Image 1: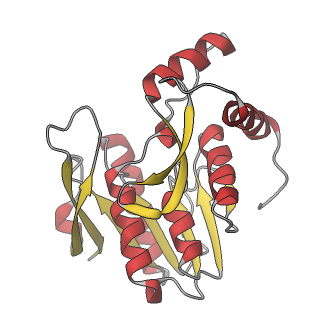
Image 2: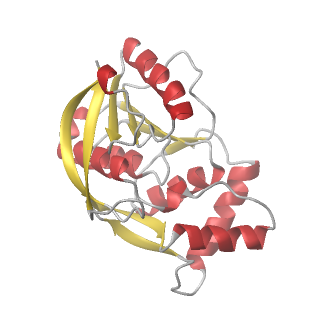
Length: 231
């Protein structure tokens, strides 16, 4: 860890550890499962993230962040697959996984031989999920819950970001950060299934993958996902 867990993140970790140990197999439970497109990596995911979220909010008595980490997203799956299939991109390098969610891409980087991996997410539950998922996959992943997007650059050789262009507001902050990281010498890789705010004129395609998805807004069971880097 970058530092001992404190406050909200430590509390979230305690909650998730209790959830994992709790009996039951309903839609509102977390399950340890192989990732569909990256079966080498197992993750604790919700059978139904919305149902799980509703139960957890009711138990907490207050609003909780949307549990994006409790589902596996197409952009992250493609990016993780790309790293595992091309370990030379990662081996011996310092890696930053931006908006890490479940930690899938960070874990794939660690499996592929990264010297150090830092998973970043501003949701304390995501940070806790990364810790738990890295543990079950027997890899070391450091975490930080800081908002890094206004920083001058990234202290990494490789910056990876899966599914970060799903809103205009986020895209307008993420792209400049990625460009600054690239200008500072880092390699930058993005995984995106055409979320709608991808700045295609500022990125070049390296690969594409047909990724299994269970996202409710998608009609097909497969989603074509691009792996890109800044021009």
